[in-house]
Length: 240
Image (cartoon, rainbow, N blue to C red; front, side, top):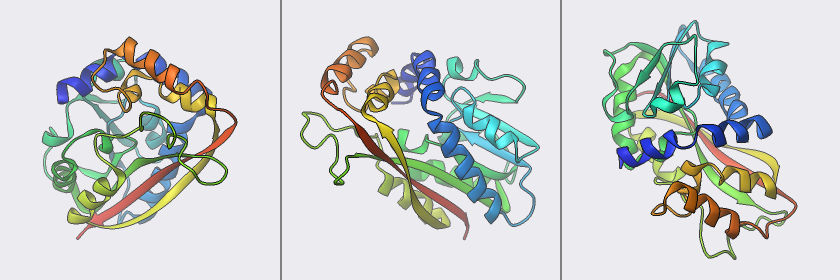
């Protein structure tokens, strides 16, 4: 599973950046999550682990609040896009850091990509100092004006390896959490652009090769029109 995730994101750098340049979505999520984390930290918010940093969009946001952000990602190709910040290639199940190393751990749009988020949550708790904070964001999907899932009448559903409920449950086992929902107005075209990222097209066609899954996703979503709402659940926690 980890090898598949790594390959998917190694193949996604250019499409990921194109989506972000058009929508600013991951920057917006990181800014909101950073505000929630820094507001709840008991003490300094200087050392932050950006777990699942990708190309560093979220890391740059955390660098605005934290003096010592560190970017961690399983994809070397993604990390190569980030300069000027310490970068570590690794996964969430075995964080290569000592106990109590961080004031905050952020899983900005990343924890839902692992099959066992509880292990990652325990690792986050281990590397956090007393009073440190953890945060995650997980997708809830897209709905049209009357609240109907835009995938309801399509032959495929856009599903994460781990759902938002399971991400929340994993963090709630290790932390005292608060949660909520962030909503963004977007367009059908941006739904297509999201699924033009090979790693995100895997939500629809996980068994196909990257180019083939992107082509199939484009075909599936060709009929979507107009403005829709994208929803994300946020979860922020402090150690119990």
